[in-house]
Amino acid sequence: MSTTAGSRQRTRRNPRKSPWRYVAIAVILFLILSLADVALTNPNFGWPVVGRYLLSAVILKGLLLTLELTAVVMVVGSVLGVILAIMRTSANEFVARGAWAYIWFFRGTPLLIQVIFWFNIAALFPQIELAVPFGPTLVGFDANALVTPWTAAVLALSLNEGAYMAEIVRGGLLGVDRGQYEAAQALGMRPNKVFRIIMPQAVRTIIPPTANQLVTTFKNTALVSVIGLADLLHSAQVVYALNYQTIPLLIVAAFWYLLLTSLLSYFQALLERRYSKGYAPRSRPEVRTETSDAVAPKEV
Image (cartoon, rainbow, N blue to C red; front, side, top):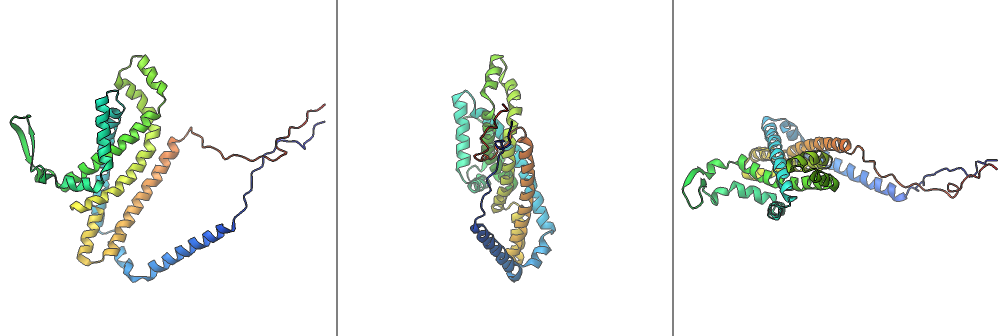
């Protein structure tokens, strides 16, 4: 006769709640209340000034320029990153090492230095010329007139972004099963045909870190304020240079950066969830009791 004493039942371990958990919660609540008290009672925060300039025309104009700069940099940087990633994975050693040197240089130097360098490129090349090597000059431009603050910002941020996007795209390409490449080569496909087959498979791996890079690029645009480009931070700096309300205007700029970063992070999470479909997360191991491994005796 069958019995239920040896039925297979799995039980989860019930962790004991440590008293330190409540201590940590108390400390966190204390810190939150303390910060709220300081923020609300200290008049130097200038909350009326914050409310006055939060939606002011000069701030919103700077915010719009920041968003435009972010969009341009991401498009140019992504295209450049794809080209560099293909070069980096090329069988031609010279091409691969050239792409590696580019990535090494732009990832290894501070972005702020790159922004200042491109803004001051006229000190190195007063005239930007297109000429035949050791021959006559075909066309020339005044560097100061050609490289405006906007141009310098786009150049610096895009070239830097291309280096980071190259590694993201290369990681996606390397994540595709090697058998896909070998099968395409066995069929005698051209490299451009192989790329059109491999790239859609790599997109699943490429898009989530690209969304994260978008958030980083949006915040990095604040660096262009040092060259006088009227972005969000520079607009706030112009205002507090006139009214000496430094802290309130920095709070205004920080609010917009935080709001837009939070929205971008939210959409990043949606993208990660969408492109992670089909990849089940690893489940937590279950703990069996001594009776769970017992096999119910068969009916005799």
